[in-house]
Image 1: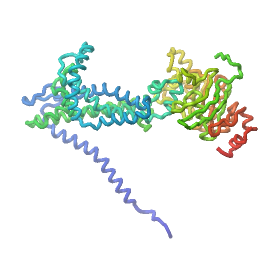
Image 2 (image 1 turned 90 degrees about the horizontal axis):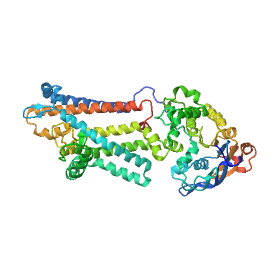
Image 3 (image 1 turned 120 degrees about the vertical axis):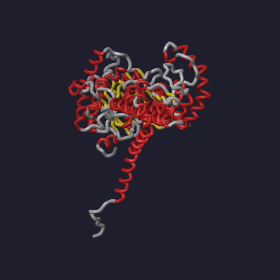
Image 4 (image 1 turned 180 degrees about the vertical axis):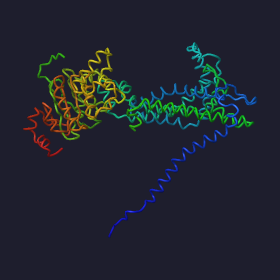
Length: 316
Length: 258
């Protein structure tokens, strides 16, 4: 009979494709597990010697073989927090301006230029920080802050230039393009009908943006912030060039500090003893867990905010 | 609201109105008035300018970058006169859209009160009153009174559209514009909205754009037929559907084109 297709048989192409994708999907979690295992092996010596006291210890003295990571954890979290405090309002403001208010012809060029900021290597940010940002902060911004907000412990003490605040500011500049461009995409995905509904009720464009557009996109915007947070926690080069690299927990943001990523980059090549090397790997291990914890907390937040409600993400 | 104009004077009226998108005139030189406490239907094939015309009545046409020449008079005031605030205008001329557009992050209560929040702040008890009154007017009160503070997107499509009507009537506008309000609803939801329009006209002047000619025939007091941006014919609904004066109108309502 012409054109008769046998009912039995297998589609080899489908099988091969499925196998390939399954391998790819397994490979990534496997890689992660392998990474964690290697970090554990590398830091085993330090874990056995210092235990969890490593995390609460504040002393870092390779010669005396004393290692405590608390100032590093503090530095990583504080510099990232400063970065978000500065970058979130700024990037959100720009994203809202670009989607809701800016003249049409200017929207694309501005978004493009801001996204270009993400392409600059972090060592270039570091150099710019040393030669431009730090002198500006030391001579103008920090003295001004000390004069106006000096009653807060955050803005007291001697001004060196290299400091927690300088690192936070450079991080803010570095994460801004990520937060801005993702927020912008999410805001663009908000249906026009939502804007028109608000405007039709007699809302100003500002009120329409705040009551209809931004709430609709809020879980997507939180996602953008988390992306920025991830960058800020792990950023190494620019931070180590500006933060001052001192193992210390200071109340003042003018004081130098240190971060987990920065100490690894600075000391890894110089680690002479096995225990020093192992302690640095332990720092990496800790950084990994801090990042996972912060991200998990942030995802939980998104989930709670967007439960049972449409999100900007779904609108894409 | 006291109205100094004689009872027969239209509540809102377009005079020599042409509406543009860039250089393209989507509505051409339309002069048309709408009497108070009546339902007015705008019909015509897709692209005939009826929705654009509707959107010029509360200046939503400008939101998408359009502009107009001519006048739209609300009472005796030209809404396109210099110094007229669009936000104030839209509180007096409300609008319901084709797709239900509840604000998804707000509760039912917050949705209805959304139009009140913009502008003067009212005491809580007053807002409660207005929300109840608006939901009653939109024939939704009995269905949602026990879950006012739950999410608005849990409602069915028809309920969402009635919620949007409640939201629009809450600030007590004089004119309510509806742009194909039942286009995305099932027959049952459509019927509820049509019934609702009859009760709403006691309080408001209603202008409805519809693709559905049976709907226009069922609900409206006057009908205006648009074609290619021009107003072809207007008159009492009965007359338009039984004895249209213009050949094109008859061709459209009998389904020969459009």
